[in-house]
Length: 285
Length: 234
Image (cartoon, rainbow over all chains, first blue to last red; front, side, top):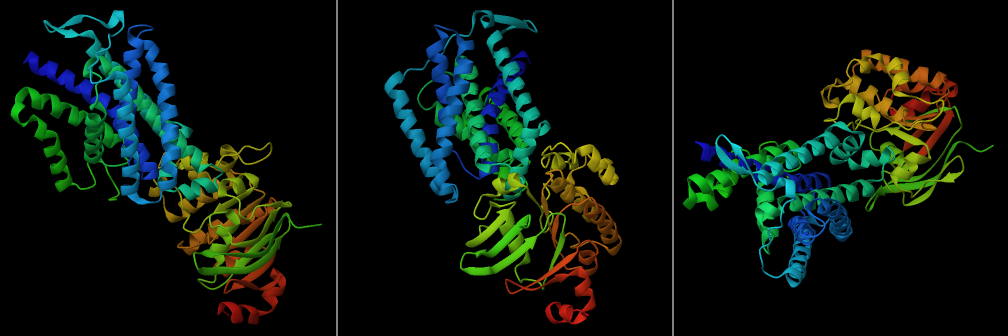
């Protein structure tokens, strides 16, 4: 019974981490109808920043660095994608996938094929007793930190004027422009913000998931599953989808190990069959 | 003295189809001009071209002497034009308050949310509702409120009465007359002659992309054959 609780906690942390990635992917898609296949690279970027700084300045110092580096990478991605914005998902997919390949090779050049597990800050090491068993403190921290990030995302998008502008632009960009807002700033800003979130997710998750080549595509595919299950462009959908996929992954490995790699995609197929727009999706694109 | 809004030989359209074919029109400060015309003669395209929502192919749009033709919509909005577009184009998932908030551009003596809610008290009761769930008349009021909060020097209204019940149109006319009495400069496209005339002092009629008639409202009322000839009404 306790093992199930721990599996649940692991899944919760994994799901919330996935949300920091999926939220941005979904927002960018909702606003610009751009499928950014380089989104996983941003998580990997955050991960390697964590690796570089954890042994020296500490993991906490990696957060602001990842925020800035992620936003900058996101802004570059926006300018790269801008010319193919109206050219359909295939062109955007090929372009962003190409950028992801380039980044993966550059990263491999610097960090090789090793798996890095950067050390958490001193006070987050060790484990605490939960119902008589020991659970790593850092894993609890991942849950709290990622939940706090999710909360900030929701408050900014749903409760601020800035968020209202973004949501309005999702509905009708031309009308938002006619109210005096520069659409390219809004889109570039959302791209940069989404990128920064993924990079921060990479820092927070690094000590748990292990930074290595291939992590970018692995997480990208999961995030894509999340937004498909939750509904493209829906923040609420991304959260529910991320929590669901997080649980299915960890519970699957614990309970049905031989089926675990199939389960996530099985759920996605099932959702697509029953509700093609995803759980919270409105428009069938 | 030149007009506040001066349109000279404006051409606009979509791709190869030329819809607005050389429109010239002056709007004096404080004036109300109604633009009539049959369906499909280019009135909405003209309004969108003024606002930069459709890019004009040639011609000039001068607002207080500043050239706006060819500028992007957000710059035109900042220069002082605001539009209540055809079909209202509210953001349906945003609340009434959020829709209005997006319009806010503060000026020393202009509209604020508070003064707007005084003018349109029914919206004050619906601030937290998604705009998409309001009635047609209420949605139109939100669209007008959103544009007013921009505190524009010229307000463009594109068929505000479209799809509304007569009782609601009368209410709308009351609000628009109040705004005109306050000295707001308005260019309105309307199908409803009564609404259009009640709030304007000048009439322009558009046919196949051009202005074919211009007069004061008094002159227009005195010569019923103008309306018969261009609009097919008595």
